Image (cartoon, rainbow, N blue to C red; front, side, top):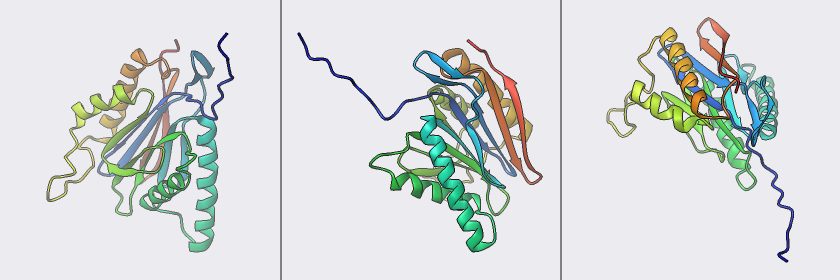
Length: 223
């Protein structure tokens, strides 16, 4: 008789998809609200988007316990920064802080796949995309999570980001207007929900621009 042993892992993947698109003077961050484990839906109302600063939002998929721990740590670090500097962190500074925080835990990583979006010091939209151990890049658009393999080719086809190898360096912002970017996000999620069982229920869209932050929701299929 073969010996059987319990196989326990400290990690789980709760699924879900995140997208961010940077424009000339706005940034759109979107994620679905489904949280699953295996073939079970744990909740249909789990927001994956958190506000890190006035002009900076983060969307995270992966293991939601690690995501919550990461959000709490970033909030604490941002509070310390505000007390020391009497101002809020800029989006590029927050992007570097997130990279450092993830890299510090590289031997027992936060199982969290993040996109960070907002406005930089010039008021331009910026999106940063990450792996689980803090390697990051500023891009014009990005997707993370269980549906990213379906969403990213769609965005590549529609937005055609310039190669980072081109000289002189091209701006990474997308040519779309704000309303066009929101419509594109709705389209990619409606498409990904058809094929990915971990993406669905409801879409949360957050738009960051000079006026501030606004949210809107759209229902996705619930099966």
